[in-house]
Image 1 (cartoon, helix red, strand yellow):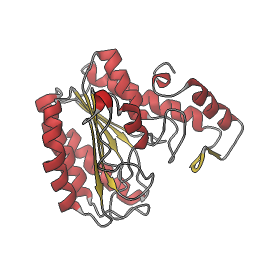
Image 2: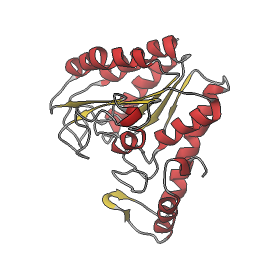
Image 3: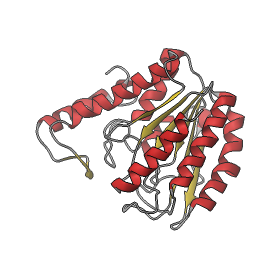
Length: 261
């Protein structure tokens, strides 16, 4: 709970708990449905992230994937949004920084939707580089190219808004030519991935046309980069993905690439 409170207001956390206990069917917005068990399951999701970070820094694993739900990257400091209750990747980032002395963390968000909650939490933090490639204009309406952070965090937010129909070729070209050079300049000590797979061409909730190829190539590129900069450490967390067959294939592709020598 102490780690969740670093990211979310205590009053909000209590409101999530009570709203679930009251057997409400949604919280804050109609797109964030809940059931009586949602609060406890969201706590377990965060706990899984912390356990995964521990595994990397205790030498039990080189990298890892959190097969968790609910997702997290839309959750704001005091608002549930877009299926998300607690911002899993933001909590995991702060945990790594404060528990293991990590300074610079790179967050790569390849979910088809912009991670508004993650960006807003870190946009003034110069030690966290947030990158998002997402369909735009689209839910939640944030993530335009001019959003680059503010104060000490200016230049540490990079948004790549993509048009409907963008496929593997254009997506990977932007990933390699626009994002990776800036990431190398940042020199992260840990890479965190908001691994949504709803940019897949078969996903019903969006309009990008990625195949499993993009997820394989991006994972391979990030692994190569992690060897250079982050002592191989990658924490990947499930976000979106709503065609179960496409989701399964994409996750398998991602896991095989993470597990490869």
